[in-house]
Image (cartoon, rainbow, N blue to C red; front, side, top):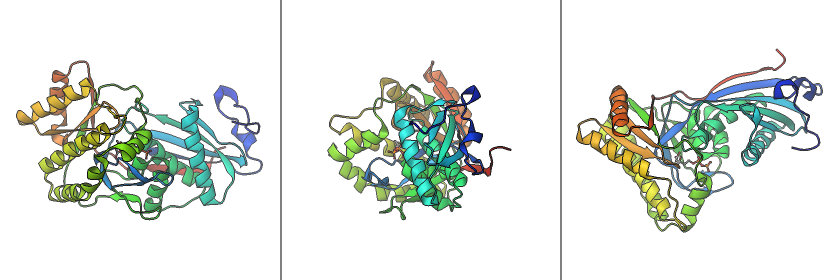
Length: 353
Ligand code: DP6
């Protein structure tokens, strides 16, 4: 926020007509969904470009979309970032403004932008709001600034905002090829997957996390003696996962997913000081999932940078899995998430219409 920023108009919304200085009021909107990794991304080799140490593989979900509208303002205008109609907290809005500067640079434009975003799900609680958030922002900003990007280039762009966002450009299973530089690090669909999977999300705690995944993964890379084995075992695990998806072997997909999540948490538990997102409530759900398997209902747990446990199951089993988990863990909310679509964009069009 600075001297050149215009004040908000009626209803708390910026008075966009007065921002244009002769430019058309171009606007684009994008909707993107979160994704949950089955082979996790945890650790960067390049912090600035967000190049990961390893490749990762995820399932995009059909719940909790982020909807983001980007409206271009005048040349040199400050960016403005609103979440649910209110200014976004400083740290988050600085990340968004930097991202918009990058998009402007790619487009050869120095116009400011107004971003209006809202999450249908909880923000910053390990339910991948940054993945859906930067995927939607990348697509809306690229369209508003007039960039016509391939889905691969859109994935590379989303990656610059948040690594996991590179995968939310695509629906269903997606793989983010680690690559070695900006050009070679992008996600793409896993086109030969023959598994019909869903997730049952157990909301152990929808509050904000104790440490951001960005800081926690840096600490893991810098201090955990388990980071090296985590990185070394990735290619084999990813190859096994891709093969299991190709063969439609749900059991193998589930077993690899659960052990991959546990290994990621093992790597961070080895950091100094340790990073621990899992709580007693998480562990209780891990027990409940193991109990379902012993009872013949195939389900596997995966956990990210928070205490919530996502249970992978066959799509047809999801209602039974949810019912069994709800009975085992009263008081916890469970949400069924089927496989969801990739990012969708509308616009660019004239904001004055
Ligand atoms: C545990 O993509 O949020 O969800 O690239 O620093 O923005 P940055 O991190 P982010 O990390 C996601 C980590 C994870 C695993 C995963 O999604 O692969």
